[in-house]
Each structure stands twice: as structure tokens, then as C-alpha cells.
Image (cartoon, rainbow, N blue to C red; front, side, top):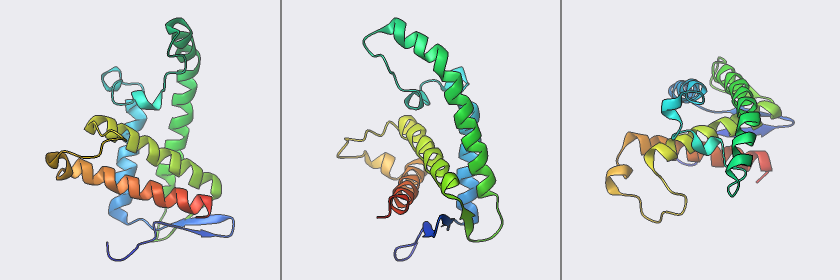
Length: 159
């Protein structure tokens, strides 16, 4: 990318996503994987950050909360993923997006980023990233998602 590319711009009450076809395919593919990972017992560690502990000092309360709320969170996230995948499949180089779709887009990108960061064992407070991780395609993807998330949040907040 040359200069300071705009990932998203605001136009009145709506937004426009400026994401290339290849990037759209990657993000949509990751979202499709995430959709299934939420209920895959083998992916429980990877998606743990999507289901934060609410009652850390009371395991009984925590188990009850998870029992009552987890399915609702999964259903809500699946609906959001479906919305974002539909948005990313729209034709054209500039994708018109409503304010509601933009908020869902931000949540979805953040979810992918959280899961990828967990898989890569990236800590938010880490000052140094191991060189082998810096050179990996997965870390480059993590960086791209971070860039998209930051740009989207800035436009949403009017910064």
C-alpha cells in the first residue's frame, strides 16, 4: 500500500468500505471459519477470548452464566458474521455500508483479530514480538486486521 490508504470513509449517515477483492475474500473466509469455530470443542482455546469470564471468583455462577448466555452470544455473532460476509460480497470497488453494518463489521473484524492473536499468542502488552512471528504470514494478517479495525473505529468515532 502506498501513502495513507483509506479503508473506510463516511458519507452522511453511511460509510464506504475500500477493501480490495483479495482482502474481502480473506476476511470473509476467516469469518466463515470463525462462525464454525465458536461451537467446535477443538477450537475452545482459540475462541476463549470471545466468551470472557464474567464471574472469575465464583465457578458455579460462571458455569450458570455460560450455560444461559453462551448460545445467545454464538447466535448473535453468527448473525453478525452473515451480515458482514454479505456486505463483503457486494460488487464494486467501493462497498456502501450502513451505520449498523459498519458497527457489525467492526465487531466481526475485532473477533477475528482476537482469535488470531490468541492462536499466535500475541499479548497486548508485549513490547517485543519474536522475529519468527514477525516474518509469518499470519502475523502480517494480524497486522492488517489491526489496521482495518483501527481505521474503522476512527471513522466511526469521527476522529
